[in-house]
Length: 320
Image 1 (tube, rainbow, N blue to C red):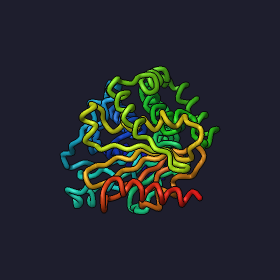
Image 2: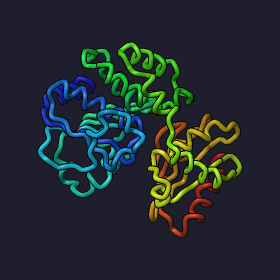
Image 3: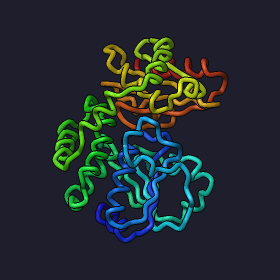
Image 4: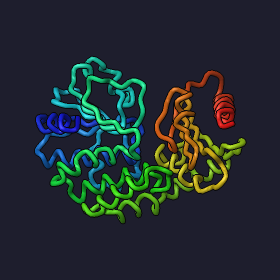
């Protein structure tokens, strides 16, 4: 499969690369490294994220290349990174489903999915910490001449963030071996560290105050919540708000920490855990992701508060 994918990419000239909605560090890293690599191979590349990337990515010089609109032109190849299902790219696929049904599609991912399309050329490794890790391991031995320090930096970006800055209980030998190899390729670890962990805006800190005031403990769960309309009030975006999970993850006792966001008639829950398999919990709500980082989305049947209570009650029951 690896050889087929690389051959298909090399044979294609006009390529569009997509990531999922609310792109995180792994998705952004995957998009940008592919753009640099394929541009160096003289390909015509379009980068697409369903919604505008967070302002926290502003320190990345190529972030402006990522567009939130798609032109539906005649591309030779479409590539999905950090997602396997077209539903994850939102309205872009829903508006013109027939367009995507006719396209050649390649997938790089590390998430479990219930709707895998076997007709696509796919590399999905559920055991990988990040999508960047999947892609790096795909090309590092057979296309190493293309891995510049800039590309290595974007690989490192996804690797470190999806591992919780190397704190999650994953395959440590694998992830540290890959991290070391990326450093040898010239990855700028200092750039990532200074802008990822050591740089927070005052707006973000003020928003954290609200989340801390609302923080609640319910048996094994520590959680807080907000309405998406509040983001504009504090001049923050979703990715900045979700970083709160990283902050409270330092608290010792809870098995699960959560951020619960109301978005119109929907609730989106993001979970983190140090030593509990929360992927199964997320799957019970119809979604998934990883052992220590997972999430799901639910419709609000009654009201926001009732939905929160029902979610927390169900998860606590599953933890017993």
